[in-house]
Image 1 (tube, protein in one colour):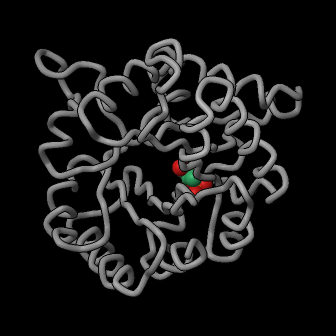
Image 2 (cartoon, helix red, strand yellow):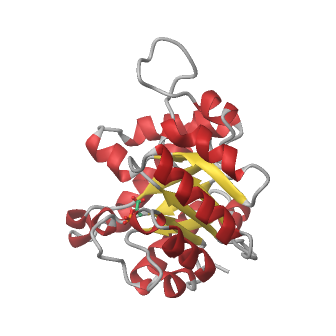
Length: 250
Ligand code: PEP
């Protein structure tokens, strides 16, 4: 049995004060959760404050990205060793905003996946199709291509100990959610695709859904056979909403 994971992606939001209030609310709410893992991914600048509050709690912390390089002259970047050193257990890699706004190719994302995995931090590897790709009927092809870039870099056991987030780009921040059937169908495809390389890893890997998941739709989505939790953007910025999604994962 896979334990569901609900992870909040706070993106570039919050002040020191609002982030402290939010993480205190999450830590408090998480105390009564059972059978669901919880993580939050603040902006890099807020990681230290968040880790200080989550210490000793059942809330893990992750970064929203990591550099392909480990150290040196890369102005503005943050290495996975630094992220790990700050107390993070997860790193989101290949979010569609990184892919589209910052030009991260499948190969760059795969390189990032490799450095994160090697560090011992768990990658939350994001994949998903645009609206145009869905309407052209190539959703599975796109997901397979994004996954295969990681297999090429890391081999058949690539996804052992990692997390995958299926996030249809057209559903991120738009209020449009994939229906539970649409999401389940892609999640099942992803698991089968991984099973072609390693059936054991495919059975164990947590595959999260992301894209306008909220307290109203979380239970039905997470209730699908191959949906093992959620990566939550907008609804993770309010502790009550985020906790409601976490409760749906129990
Ligand atoms: C995301 O950006 O990972 C995400 C799922 O955002 P939202 O929940 O706001 O659609």
